[in-house]
Image (cartoon, rainbow, N blue to C red; front, side, top):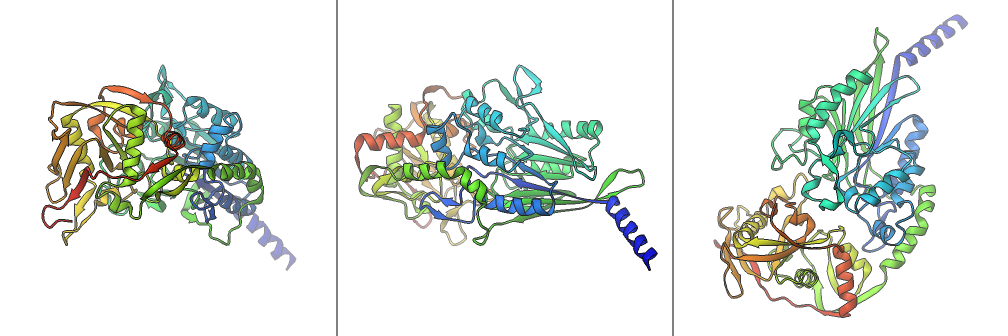
Length: 547
């Protein structure tokens, strides 16, 4: 009996040596949500890095040697981040402090890491106790040299399993970001970068598992392969799965989707936004006759914190002083509204001129010294202003650190831009105006619909796409194609963001370097009380049956 028991134990030990399990945990698009806070109301929600940290701790208790990776867009997006940038720029960014505490193995820069300029980005990287990986972002003077030092890392588990993680970022950043924020850097095509580096890593490092961490998403429907967006190259995850041999796992982000599955034999994951989920990749290995580890099984899952998941105490306490100061800062009153600037329905706001959007355009025109402006409602959660206005109200309506740019446009450019805006709407089978599905999936892009001031216009959704501008007047007369007009808009749009290609390469008349949130706050402090007004200079019509 004793002999059989010993033989069984030896067999079990051999089995352990012949099998291994590796886990990779992933965060992406956290956007500065460390605390589980709804900054509009101060209420707690089941989101944020402090909630994910509890899940991370639990997974580590089960698998101490797991890897932890962030896939980008971590330092921008909440009032906490804004408060840090404005009031403690010399300190460690709270997101980085939390990541250091949680012992991240690597991070990939997302497009929003560039929003605050190079000085702050370099500081963030220098303050990190982990490497930042992005093979496709290189120094413009020597494109063989990655801008952030390391294109990939290799980690070996206690069992001897060798894991390579290649970082790559969407190369579309120059279409969105202010040129001064990315000066001296070149952005190589992300798909081409993966095609170059994966076989090189396979040959030189001979990893047992090849992981690509890509701050970008999927350009096609995962189940059918049908295109889900204009194939511009902003998102190339689907092509990476099908066109790059040797990729075992593809981590994605940028689109804020909840994805866990497989495409073309590649295990894929994307854990939403704001810390709403923790991605988890589990890989089982079997040792082959040659002594090398081979992948036997791969699974992807999303770990979603609920109200029962408590915030991780150590991370909570680490960020508490900054969070408390942020909440006090947000509650400062800075102005009053005479009348009603609330937004009851974002959809209705985009059907006809609205007092809040008129105010936004007025702020932009005053700051830029021009009389034509366009602006977008940036979030479906924007509520506008009513009664007493606090800094919280401003920052929750203007969450992006956009600056302003004045472009010199011809009348034909304005008409073309309005046609692009009109593409936001379609007519349903019942003849009712609805949102074009391409603005909803795979990522909601309501912020790519602009509303103008300083011109009068009507868009008829019943007309064919490209022929919907049925009225376009400036100063009481039809706007001619050759007439030049100086127009102020945010820097994202001025760079052509949102498929506004007509703006690319147009003369830049002026740049206003202050963030839009700062401009709004300064306007309110200067005027004290603002009056809700609306001149009704534009509307959407349905020439078939009316609205």
